[in-house]
Image 1 (cartoon, rainbow, N blue to C red):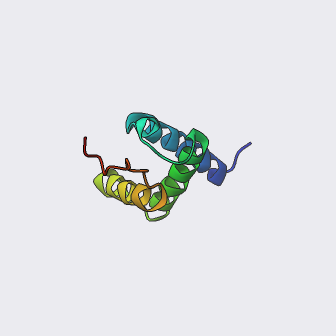
Image 2: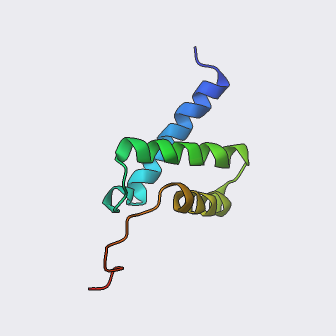
Length: 81
């Protein structure tokens, strides 16, 4: 039998995996692999949950979380062709 914290953890992990898929994170140029990306997303979603954020506030928090904890590698030419 799982306790409430364990159930919440599983739900948040699932949410992190879904966020990784729906927001196209696998197509971006990160220095880390999928497992690390999802782990960082899990921590972000857990922090948002602790703050009781929902909807747009949750989404904005996650975007900021990603910017702080999962920076993208930018092309050497700054993205200019």
